[in-house]
Amino acid sequence: MVHGHRSGGGRHGRGPSGARGAARCRWLAGGGAWEVHARIERFVEPSLLLLLRDGETHGYDLADALAEIAGPDERIDMGNLYRTLRALEFEGIVTSRWRDDLPGRTKRTYELTEVGERLLDAWAEALRSNQRVIVGFLDRYERKDPS
Image (cartoon, rainbow, N blue to C red; front, side, top):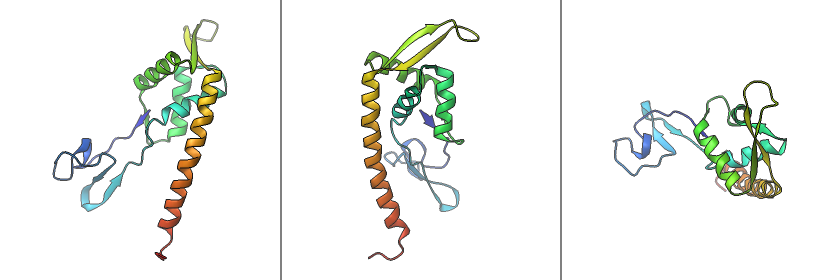
């Protein structure tokens, strides 16, 4: 869905010295400070389902709405967006159709199916569970007393 640009020795799975095998979600930046990219894998899927729950829309509107969810420092990969939509359609999670009744050129619009609504429910529950884990981590992190 989104990919932020990162800099430093740890890019692309290489450690500060350039060695392979380093974690791709963290890297040592200039001045010895760590940078961490706490990304949620496959977050584009639940985000698209959530947006499509609001009604039928086309890819560029979805991209704009995804950018609002992702935040200003992230970019939307349009190729990944359309690959994801095609895969979701193949699985019966969304449907698409060509519309020439909308302003401008003919657009392909996407709509959530009943199967997609059930998948969105499952994503919401999984994210709630992850939220509890993250809140627990942050609560413990915020406590200065290790007891």
